[in-house]
Image (cartoon, rainbow, N blue to C red):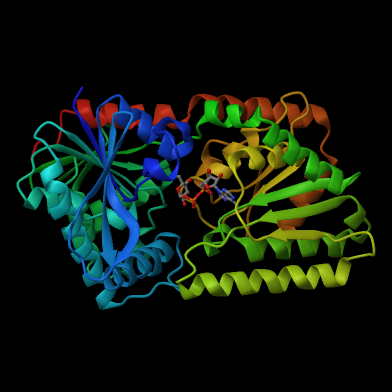
Length: 464
Ligand code: ADQ
């Protein structure tokens, strides 16, 4: 097996988290793939420097080398907060109303991708497999090719790919996609995002798409494009669930809710997660069933993210306002219907909360996959599982079809789903859980890694 080089915006550097093997999730899975292939993980350190030097800091731990560079303030503003999180993120989540089309952002994005290519080049050997992650680094493969690199290079997009009609609102959209075709393998979370991408390639680029073999041929070069749905780190989640920390967290939640049913939302504070819309759905539920305010308590865990971007500050204000309104209108001396927790929790604590909550509410307006939905199921008691209410617009809905699927934009739909979940008999809860848990356990993050790498290693296409 060739050596593996992973390149992503951020890197899980060992010194920040103890031993490399101790972490689960995506970082843990990438680390185990890197460990078995004496790999290197390259990206931004998360640090800001006075001016960019390209100096690489390396840390070696358990057979994995992490290599990071610091970025200047201008790079962070234009590439990370700018093009990545104010242009591509909203656009790819179908939010052209929030998309900022600033030329400086586009230039900063090109510049940092070029810097990444320049900094990573000396780390890469001829037979290395290179795996680039996510929307921050779409043109990186092409930048590496421009430096003469003939390695097999793959790319995985963690977020949705928007319909062509929205995507063409991006200035230089053709350029972005043609750079993508410099990769040998392009992975999407679901068939839906893959189809949107293929549709764009056919209609706008005039590329030749062979859906049977999953290949795109453009200007004499062939690229594999497939869906590789990401999963959770099942074993790590179960290990965390077996800790005292998980049990304590679950007990804390149960003792504080007493006879009321806990309904739980766990999300980064991001407008794509549909949080204000969710609160509207809960308000509608209380309007329709005022007596049920004694049956249920909603707990929303939402730590802030990307606070330097204005649209993220606004979402926080909106959420606080809406939560305050419902609590003002519906609270009794002994009852507060919504608890809003503005900070993150460890996975062990989340496991405890997931298991104690009889309803999991996961209602993004658009989501590449959504791992919270899978973690919620993975934490349930198989003999008495809770009910998952899931947005039909999350990638996860394509696999978790026995969840109560909802339209997150419709308060009535949400209200109806909550009512149905509250009354769902155990038999039906079990039937739905049994139908979904196999894919959550088996199609886990390790399988995702090995499926992608098998195609990257073994595909016969795309030799540059
Ligand atoms: P995110 O949008 O961050 O990631 P999501 O899949 O919802 O995606 O969550 C990722 C992880 O963050 C989960 O493991 C979860 O436990 C953790 N997390 C979320 N909220 C938390 C909280 N309040 N406290 C602590 N931890 C929390 C992007 C895409 C997704 C895609 C993932 C993986 O947007 O669609 O599923 O990448 O590819």
